[in-house]
Amino acid sequence: MPAHVPLLLLNARLIDPASLSETRGGLFVLNGRIADLGPSITSDTALDGARVIDCAGDILAPGLIDMQAFVGEPGAEHRETIATATAAAAAGGVTTIVATPETSPAVDDPAVVDFLLRRARDTGRVRVLPMAALTKACEGREISEFGLLRQAGAVAFSNGSRSVRNALVMRRALTYARDFDALIVHFTEDRDLCGEGVMNEGEFAARLGLAGIPREAEAIVLDRDLRLAALTGGRYHAAIVSTQLALAALAQAKARGLPVTCGTTINHLTLNESDIGDYRTFLKLRPPLRHEDERQALAQALASGLVDVIVSDHDPQDVETKRLPFAEAEDGAIGLETMLSAGLGLVRAGEIGLPRLLRAMSARPAEILGLEQGRLAKGAPADIIRFDPDAQYLVDPAELRSRCKNTPFDEARMQGRVKLTVVGGEVVHEI
Image 1 (tube, rainbow, N blue to C red):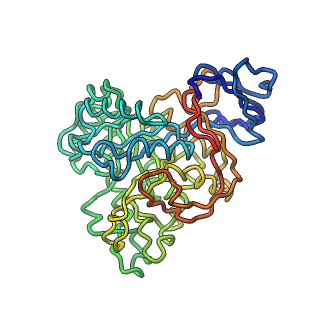
Image 2: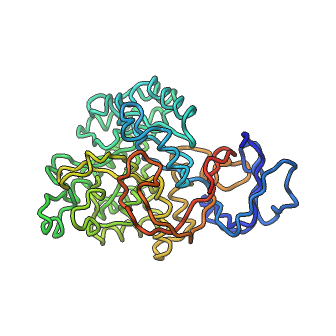
Image 3: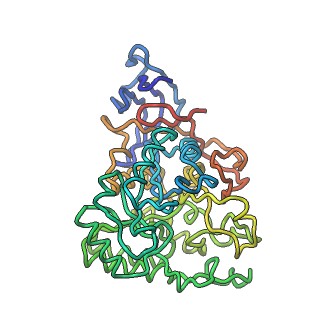
């Protein structure tokens, strides 16, 4: 379809997660932006040449913004490419991917940022925004050149799945970031305390005969970071929280007015350690899946707004690294294509309302990153998804668009199908 053909979407449930509001009506897209929306939008308002789509009562919402996904390029194209990652994203309703910096080479040079932006422009279906490396080569020793990387187009700074051990380095990073109004995104894990652990420490790990990872491994580093955020005034985002210990610390920090936010993964919201069952390596994750009590606490924190963001933590791993004994298998799961469907399970279970779920997947990430997207409002970019929350399907790994197939929802029956994905006014996915 030619670029910027006007679109008229009729007979829909319009959900704006930025205002947590829901109405019925239509939406008109012109020149890549939302020109108008609401009950007054009918077929009579169509311009000549506009494409008219009857949504038949389906939901229209802003496209999802995934703040943590590995896209493979440069250096790991055997696991994923920007083309395959963005195809999976479009099918899952994700219109913006924030790419993690743990590539080869790491995203610690403006030239690598430029490479990613150009590759995304040439081969991507959705928006790809690079996170730059917090430290050079993500090694945790020397902070990167935030100013140059930010100027090149980096939207935040992270060490990926490597936690910064040195408190002085983290203090300097937060101070430096404050001066550039940059966002630090940190994965909080004490690797020394994790030791040889491969799953959540507790009775279930003991029964499986596997070494456990204590909850304190997450909480200790997060406590340190929150104190450093208070000391420096730098903007800080905890990439993934998975424990009640972390939630308690974040609640205190937010109550004090510190500029801190946090995310959790769709896996930690919808699965628990028992789902690992008979050593299912597709559920070997970092941080590990926790006890059901922790999962419920995360869902409650999401509903209350304490947890700001839901991410897919899309981490493709090939067969050679996953079809191994549990203790030897690599961590990680893909998630771009199933994030929305999995989240809708929380809505059906009554654990969260649909506007609040969509807020954590679109409006809130946009606010934290300073993006225009994430709103269903006049003048907003036309990054829009249409989905049927009741449509059922079976997750068939062979049909997933990601290059790797390590989904934790392998052969699960799910509800919620994305029928249309629009990015900047252009249709990039449709069924």
